[in-house]
Image (cartoon, rainbow, N blue to C red; front, side):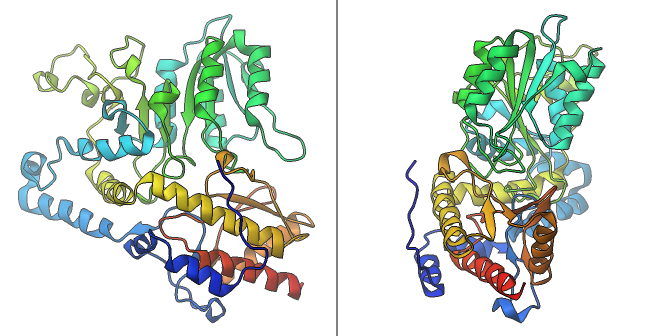
Length: 434
């Protein structure tokens, strides 16, 4: 992938000119951006760089929810069949656009539950340990929820995480992992690994991974492979079907903008569509052709739908439907193109104007990152925390991850070049004052 190049001396006028030329600039108006009262920003709105933690609210969400509330009031239970968006098949209304996000066949994806719940459900089916092959491979420093889920699954099957949870360490200086370290770990431990559970984007460093290569390496050693795409879905173009992943799961409240605690997504490759693998079953996963016969034997719906447990929460699906329609109109290819340019622009400003103040932990190569940049302040945690607080009270919103990382994510749907310029201006002002 070509790395964009920017002039070493940029300007506010240059940033505004880039925004004026941005073909996606109109999508910003489709989101509600929190206000700020700090006049130093020269803006009525926050500089919101934390779509990697909680995406902003699409304006269309309010109407989407009101439709369902009105249909509930107007129709009661009959809204399952006669609502403007009938509730019985409601989860299918997000299927096509969710498949676009995942790079999957529509039958391979489903919106259900929450991320960690889906990871547990997938591991019930795809982590089938034996005395000889019972380990799970993850990255060192994984998000705690993944670590907890994996360790608990290992214990549930009677094994010890101290020996069965294998963590791939990153480079001691950068924390980055790369495919080579995964390959070396599989070469050493592959015969005892039952499952590789890997992130699409590592949450702390922002490092992105070649999912197809990870799946190839895992399958070559006889391992099942699943992906946690919490920081990849809606951030990077995905091709889960072609990558040959066995399963994947993701949340929808970050880049997918479906609201706090939003309903999550799940992918199961079509080769497992009619699998006889064990699973935790529920009525909504029963074959829809015979579901209402109310028979005791569970017959799963083919595809990802067969892992559903309960009927879908309509008030949680409505915001996701509204957000996915925005993604569909914008197009992941166009969003990715802007993301590469905007993130490289912010990186160039930081490297040229804040040299000696900010180190960037995230890879420079666009193929190895999404829009998140993980920043470390030179001088240690105390200075990093001081900068974070300085920005926060001025309405410049990133997020903090221990021990010393400020994450900023210029998301292409609603962030601008002028936002990046003002962020760097604010840090430069802080440097001058301290």
